Image (cartoon, rainbow, N blue to C red; front, side):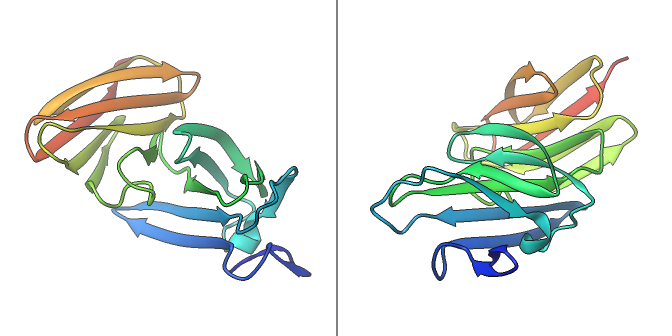
Length: 187
C-alpha cells in the first residue's frame, strides 16, 4: 500500500498499489487504484510520485490501460479522476529515457512484460522482439520525443500505425508466434 500524502493512507487498506518493473533497460511502474466502495468518486486524485517510490524530478509518460489511451507527461505527481464505485484504474508510468519509448499495450495490465521479450535501441531505431498469439492482434503504444518521419516494419506479422501528437499506436497482427516490430526515423 502506498500513501496519497505523507500523513494519510490512500482510501483503505490495499486500494492503491505501485508495482515496479525493470526489463531490457525499460523502467516503469504500474499503479492500481481500487475503489472498494459503493460511492462513486467525484474528485481528482493527486498522488505525489515520491509516494509511489518514483523520482519526482524525472519525467514519465502515463498510460491508462482500461481506456487504452496515453495520459501525457507526468511530473512530480500523478493526477487522475477517482475510479467509479467498485472499479479500478490501471496506470502505467514509464520513465522517459529514449526518443521512442514503449508506454503501454493492450496485451497485459503490466504495460506488457508478457509479450515484449526484448527492446533494442540502435541510434534512431527501436526494435521490439515480441511473442504473441498466432492470428491475434495487440496494440503497442509509444511516446515519441521528436516529431520526424517514421518508418515501421513488422516481421512475423503485419502492422498498422496511427500517430496522434507525440504518440504512436502500432497494431500488430501476429502471423507467427514471434514477431519483431521495428520503428526507425527517416529524417
